[in-house]
Image 1 (tube, helix red, strand yellow):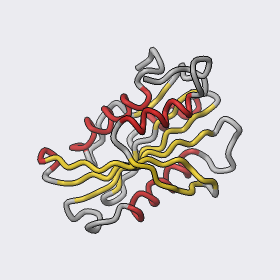
Image 2 (cartoon, rainbow, N blue to C red):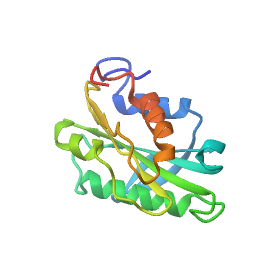
Image 3 (tube, rainbow, N blue to C red):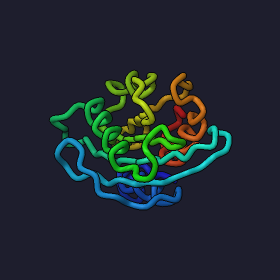
Image 4 (cartoon, rainbow, N blue to C red):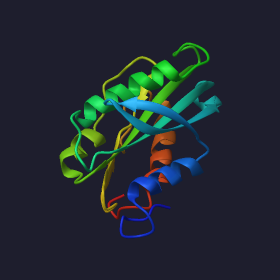
Amino acid sequence: MIEPADGAGSVTDSVMRAAAQVGTRTEDAVLGGRPCPTFRRSDFRVAWVATRMHTFIYVLDLTAGSHVPPPDLAQEARVWARDHKGGLPGGMQTGSTAMPVFIVPEVNSARAWAESRQPAMFAVGLFPIAVRADGRQVAYRRKSQFVGFVYERFRRSLASALVGGLAPDL
């Protein structure tokens, strides 16, 4: 469960603890020219047409600002997930999801983007999450998108495990 910044630790630390608790291992990624804490897990489901999904969770604290806008960082995360998945080529009964968690001073400017359907990219889904630095607001997609719809329930469940204890608007 995640605590607001006035609790024990920052929201960033809490998201990283939550990521560790959902069965991930850590990796080192660089997004926007900066090192980024990255967590990875791999899941197989027959209900996903017998595919394996490699999920990459990136924790990006943008409270001090960033020269790269969140949509561009999210696209970098997506490309990084595709390039570091390993195993069979993407689309051959395997794929990736990039799940960047953006810690931002305020969510309103990122809400529409985070909650919207993301552009399609072959074998790599994108599921951005925006979290206000005090932990009182979060935004992520709650409606399934057509491309990759079989993975949407899993993605929303994972997002809830990462940030679901934060805001009353969930």
